[in-house]
Image (cartoon, rainbow, N blue to C red):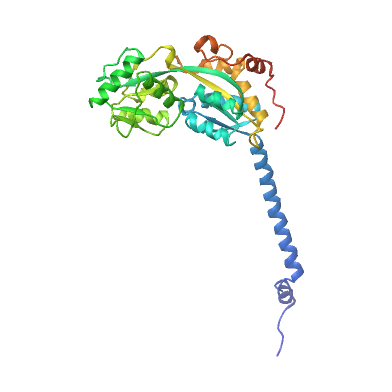
Length: 329
C-alpha cells in the first residue's frame, strides 16, 4: 500500500507521539513543584498575618458604641498589629480568656476581673475608662420612675411588673451589664426569675439588640451610656434614671497569662494596652463623642478618685514606665 505522507505529516505524527513515562514524570514533578511553590507562598503569608494578629475579647458595649471602630485603625496603622474582635458579654469574654482563645481582654465587671487576676489567668489589670449605667423606658413611663433614685426606681419597676403594667428586659447573658442589673435588684432584696416573674424577660442578646427589643415592646432596661448615645436616635425610648456612684461603669484591660495557655501574644497585648493608657490613647477615648456627648471617660491612674475602682500602684507604675515600643512577636 502506497504511503502518501509528506514530510510535514510525518513531523506532525512525531509531535503527536504519546509521552514517555519519563516525560510524564517530569511534567508531574514540575506541576507539583509549582503548586508547592504557590502553597508555600500562601502559607508564609498566612503565618505572617497570624503573627501580626491580636485577638481582643471585649464587651458588646465597646463594639456597639463604635469606640473600637474609631480607635483600632489608628492603633493598627501605628503598630502594624491587626486586631480581631470577639464581641460578647463580659462573662463570655472572661471564659474565652481562661481558655486561651484571646490574647487580651477589655471588660467591665470588676469583681470577675479581680477573680480572673487572682486565679492567675490574667496579668496587669488596669483601669482604662468609665461611663455609667442608665435606665431607659417608654415616654409614658407607666412605672413612674422618672428622676427617682435607684432604690426607689427598682422598687417601682418591681411593683409595676407584678401588677402587669410594665415589662423589664434583661440581657440575661452574664455580661457586665447583666451583673450590674442583678446588683441593683439585690439592693431592694429581690432576685428576679424569668420563669416565674412573667414581666421580667431575658433577651440573651447584646446591648444593642436588647435596646431594640425593649424599644419594640415599650419596655424598660438598663444600658450603658455609651451604647445608649450611639443608638438613641433610632429609638423611641427615653432616659429616665441616671446618676450616683452605684451606676458608674469602669472598664479594665488585662493581658492573658502566657503561662496558663500557649500561643498567647503577650508582647502585642502589652503594646495594645499601652496604647489605650498612653496620653494619645486616653485623649482619643475622651475625644470620642456622639452629638457632642462623651461616651467614655478616660481614667488611667485616676480611677481611685473618680469611682472607687483602684488599680494597684505597682500596675500603674508598670504602665507608666512601659515605652509602648513594638519589638516583634
